[in-house]
Length: 379
Image (cartoon, rainbow, N blue to C red):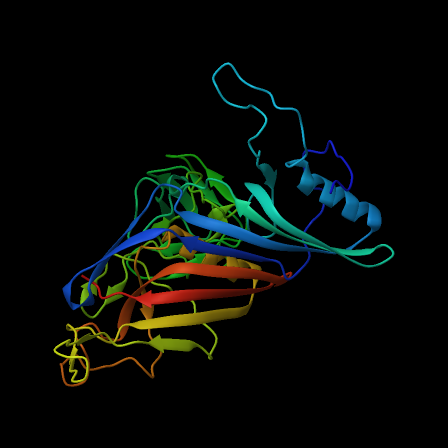
């Protein structure tokens, strides 16, 4: 079925509100004794993205144009045989498209789509766009602690003018981003764009009084070297460029600092060993030191553009297999560290990894993110 042949090389329609992007990681998991595990990616393109898009209220002409473009990859054409021994016109060529906030323009293939005609000039097209060959090498998001390759320091002095000298790296601080006072965890919002080259100095305008922004070193993680696999302009996202501090000392992984909805689902399948002495008489034994690892299905609804972008960049930067810290709900956490009250891994802080998540663009400044957190004991 060819609706209308088209020569267009791009889609000129934006998806409707309610469209969704889903992510999943192709990883190998090696489980050791006592439920410890190690995870590795299967390749540099191991983080997959599928966008389920809705195009609502299209006129007949608009729906014909969109369907024509989506069918264009599959139009019949005479076979052309190359001297290198392959057909040159059989490969499905991906197209560039920017789906919705906060994603950048990516290459997609559309292998499934549907058209529903409600009445004259009222049409709905739904389509599944699969991102082609994203690479984890495209992500240089910093981990816990300052990374001299992509983080920088500001030496601020001379209040109230707040003269800032840059060291270690070029600096690009967008408006409403944050800088962090070294050693104090104090943060200050930037009121206007601040862009300077390494070893230069200029005035930085902070949203604080002259006495609050005291002289000293400030750490930042917004530089022109940061980029993301999927997220557009990751420099607008901020997090503390420190190693998290706990009663046990510093941690080498970051913390997920965003609180989910009050309602969440906890799946628990305790690990056990089953004897096979006979078909009738069976015994069950507890398996290892950590039999009660938890699987969390979390929802983050009614999130603003800024918070949704921060959450999505955090999950992407961990690539579906890297662990991070997360404060368990107080119902399940334990203040005790002895074996009577908790298993060895159960503390106030638990470690998880997130192999899959989805993002729905409900409306402008209204996003919903669903994520699966799998608990993994910290080695």
